Length: 201
Ligand code: GRF
Image (cartoon, rainbow, N blue to C red):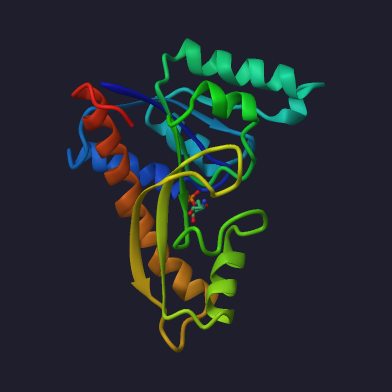
């Protein structure tokens, strides 16, 4: 069983998509042990609580130094025996010490076809505005390993959607979000299967 922590800052629809896929058994071998949010009022924490999954508000603001925040973050992961961390709308950059401790064991979902339209500032509507402004004929979503740079690590899974002439950032965001909800559970299932059969990521 792959023990997973999910980190998010918002409503948690990608986290819900993981839970729904588990319930439908379209992904197996995954156990969500912990949800962390930097936002005490984030919907993702409410979803975790409704599923009796430990839901923790943990923010850099609660600590005088980054080192103390990192120690608390890593201790939480260790205490819940977490093997893989899923960033699902987590708006903070993970400290390099955490990335190093979980090299190729942290994945992120991004609402564009990386490496295009990624990096600092490329989040939420900004991504879809940029895609439309660039005249792209297609967009999509990407699951990738997290490294020390924003939206930069090796790509695990991508799926494309058309950009329509009359698309607004909101209509494109909705089409991309539907694909996010498919590829994040699929990528997590792939990791679980790979690790459970002794494979390397
Ligand atoms: C998603 O669009 C994801 O691609 C981005 O943040 C959003 C999170 O949405 N990283 P939700 O909280 O999972 O609904």
